[in-house]
Image (cartoon, rainbow, N blue to C red):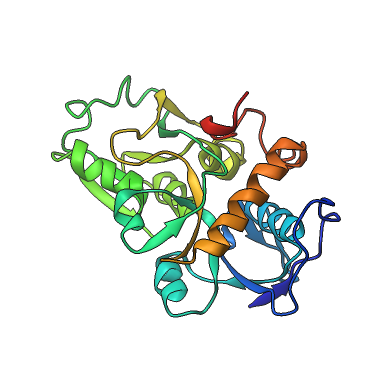
Length: 258
């Protein structure tokens, strides 16, 4: 599915002029609210979609969104199905071996969620023998495999499905994004009777930190332009305006905070 991005604003006067051949295809998911979702009429929306539009407007590029299932994102990028990925992809050493990343454009901690009162903590000892639900092939899944060797891991294909499985009783505790767990579960009727367990977790030991825009290895020109565009929208206030539509806390990556 392909959807034209409508330019959100005119590019800054100092931005480089667009080239006639400046066509950029952007891989997005559509199954990760509030970062991306698809309306019944096929319209894509969410924070990732807004970031993609703002970056394209700043670069004065003609961009096309290409919807792609999460597990196929990097293979599709490598196969030239699109030119970059804006899909809440966490920057990790393993991923940097196969793609290049922009500077981070947001950073959100993780948290455990379970039935209210089921757990008073989430140490490896407390979760030994328990089934933890997590998004497949994610840094969180990597973190669990390394930190909770005595727990059973139930991996699912989409982040919202983590909480559907928890509500259905197919696991004891869920581990996911603090934003998605709130928006897709805890703040909905389905999340009644469930709560966060303990404090939020920043995966500093298993990931570089932050979420970036992924590009094919060696595409330094595009990477440089994307980084310049991200810096511009963070500096002039557009980033904050977009983020405030979705979040009641600061998701600005550490390098961009004042």
